[in-house]
Image (tube, rainbow, N blue to C red; front, side, top):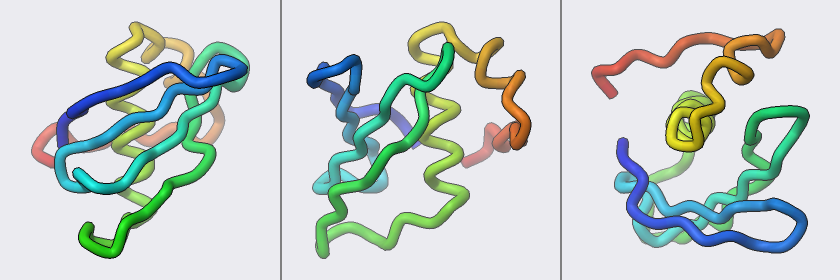
Length: 84
């Protein structure tokens, strides 16, 4: 999975497009010192977004912005596999 594109929105939110879901938009919002998936504007042409996909998206975004240290400190942190 890779980040294809992103755009800044209001209140610090950032909208992303990821390679496996090119027609769907994912809105991430800042919580404490990292980004968290708020919702997915899913498109029928894309595969269904699973929970593991959401966690991988969060990891990629926080890594992209250099916030992986803060993201790792959250309670439910689980490192995604790099093979995906």
